[in-house]
Length: 238
Image 1 (cartoon, rainbow, N blue to C red):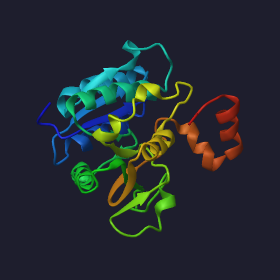
Image 2 (tube, rainbow, N blue to C red):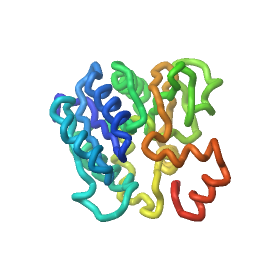
Image 3 (cartoon, rainbow, N blue to C red):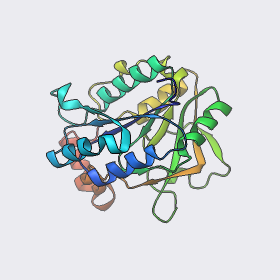
Image 4 (cartoon, helix red, strand yellow):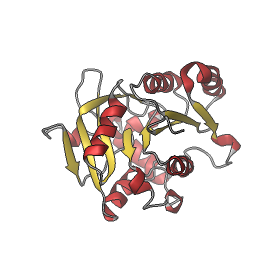
């Protein structure tokens, strides 16, 4: 593992087209990383495609169906396993979600930013659409200037580096199992325990929001239906 400079993880729930784009982009990085894809109870078509492409692209595939009977999403379990692997290897952890396509130098840029800011807990790469415009979830950073900005606002896990130092300060096994997503909580916890969070503005990644959970688009198209699902059905707990 010593030749690797980071552990990269990608949770996958269906949406195999974008997931494979993500995997190929990580494999094409200008630094060597260990990429782990976590399949979170995807359909058979997705599972077969992940298995078929594993050797060609070059990633480790972990099937959560072999580890838990808890239905998707299993982000807490993914983070727990990833933290153990990263801490054991003394490497930073990079989350690249399956609706994100990074650039060749994205990971090296993020690692350089971490070297320049050794007390960073989290460093997020800003997300853009096909036209290169900053999009969800980072529209809130659209007016910021410069290459990198310190922020007290929550980072998304779209493409976010979690430092080794922070991971040795907070055990992901202590995350609330009643939640689905943890980017907001972990962003706040990083600052709470004395670290700093940054958004990298000069290293943009393509984001195709909610490709694996299309119902979340209702937040923008039909907010009433979205919040019905969120609160009445108990979906999307952060």
